[in-house]
Image (tube, rainbow, N blue to C red):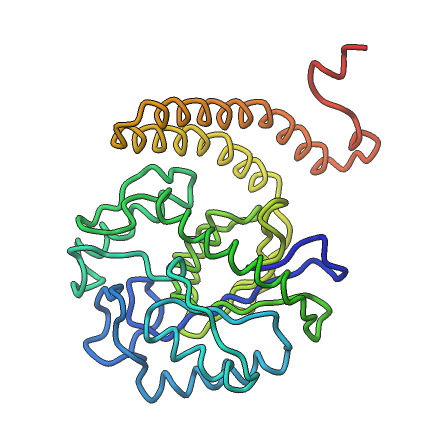
Length: 322
């Protein structure tokens, strides 16, 4: 994900490509060596098979035709780096490795079958995160992604790096957008996307998981938000009213979860100032979310009902005060 409105081009966008892997993402197995359908998230992980390399070259050829790109990024996993290499070679670019694009870590469930109690437990936390509950822990003991807050901060940190690098090298692609390409794993792409875009479709994670070398296109910036443009080649339209209202509720209920986690973390520092700062920042974050919620709901309802004469109407008590 990369881009920003300050760039003199259409809304910048990012293509996020899934690597070939036998991971817990439920994407197609058989592109890395070893038994298929096992949970495989550890760094550095296996490389690609010959078929995986062919698919990496195919997606590279397709993406190269739509370039040039502001940057290429991949994770610490060998398979993502090998998937990114053909595009980097075609364009003469050096990919930047971002740990925030790694797989969602499976802890002690590593190398267990995907179709098993362990596989189901692995999915519970990430699915809950996409539904607005990032505080839900990863039900895989030993996972470095202890909950959705930890995962999302790593993921959005990678997104911020991509955004900043893209603004520093604002190359315009063939479609007129400043575009970067990030190679990651299907489940990371899916969960990170659905947690952050303003038109999420979480059921796509189950009904249409990103396949090996599939691509997800998002557009926007970290401040104004991200919009899902396409999912494995399927165009995704603007949020419907129910989806927009879901996002409004998501923003409202995630704020206290982040605040509570930060306060909890501050308690282990042994620094009273850190605790006070966490409480203050959390209160500010929750207060801002509560104030913004009715405005966001009103705006979404007005937009959905199609009354342009209401679109500029100020909402809230301040509008009633001279």
